[in-house]
Length: 624
Image (cartoon, rainbow, N blue to C red; front, side):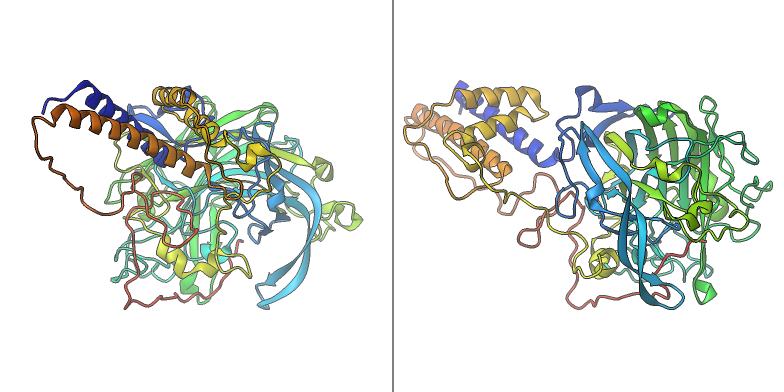
């Protein structure tokens, strides 16, 4: 049958509706406040001519956002003590919020009493901390493998006063930061070899002939760490064996297993042939090897469970503008090939190279550039190991760090107590991935690197004490009504749809649909809802489907009238049954559950397979 003009119009309209629906289901990670010029980028790495498209962004333009557990689909601000790295702070979810178009992480003097754990006696005891700060993390919400990650940030506090430890970083999804039970024997492994020396210390190792929790047998897994920046503040005095002075920023890749013998001495350069090679340092930024951090030894009993983590790190000097203005910090992360070779991580500051680590750099220990799904973190820590007097001054116990307590003053950096409150301000976070690049993947549990079942099988490792689940469901609605605008009046449906469509990144289609909505006649007795309220996304989908249905019905009626004298019967072709998921993601498996993102294959635990809990000798991370 010849295609008539109304039929073609109906088809084009249906295609447009489908495109809009697809946009709604797949563009949820891109903030509509991201400017047009940020929708794509080019790599700064020489020779990488691929086109990179924006796949995630948060511009933090909406003031008043909070990130308590269950408040936000992208981020979670933790509310717990930090047991790692000789931390002097308590993380509160009240210390992370948006204001004036930035994410603000506040560090302040505030007392917190909590239940601590003694590693030696294996008993809990009452303790206090006198600094309260914030950490926000995307754990098990948004993750990626490969791409370009870019932060715009202004660092907190006075750069000449030590003590603050602001950081922007990535961590493998199999470990949740500060939840030490999840990180031990997992952090920061990036290793896929079966060796007797490491099979006990790497929980998911390549020696296993059976794949548990949906994981592939014979594949080593872990939670490597990429530090986009860690800023060290303090006096400007000369430091040993480096031209870098405080304040400086460290860019690091942390992986395991590491060198166990002939390790570099802190504060000294490595001996020839005793450390990693093929490392690149920026000329413009004048970055140098970091001689003050080579990694940590994680001690366990028996000794076969002890393992070494290495830090491949470089330092770059900062100036006052890094604490007063926004500066751009970027990494370009190319995962390795399937055999573990190749790949790189490169760090940039304001468009200039800082540091580069390549696959060939890691040959000595047969580790590899990370290929795990990794999530983003932003925080300010305070640690007695970071910017505090070292070694401990003569006659000082250095076991007391309370401002206002005369017995503690000798252990504190000069001006430390006057450096609060301090504000770490992040203007935006943007993630790009190369178009049609199979190694660049979105998802916290992709098919070839699943994490979902392992996390479910060990939920207590990732959860707060007393909680049965690691993350609370995201809140949807439930706010009290104050006026017709937010309670649902005659114009709420049309106004909500128009506003939602105008916000779509597909500008041409958005304008067309907005125009259609603005000219749509009102009914004499409009349908109103005074008691029930639906999510705006559902209203948008229902309304767009209604428009598509009316257009298709009109087109069908017109076509039938034109052809009824020619055709006596019309065949009806039914499409195959089954649920459609335009985003390619997993469907929700439980009522009220929120699917945060595409996670690859939909794994299910076989009925005959029991959940296996691995033997854990110690459940705490030990940093020496």
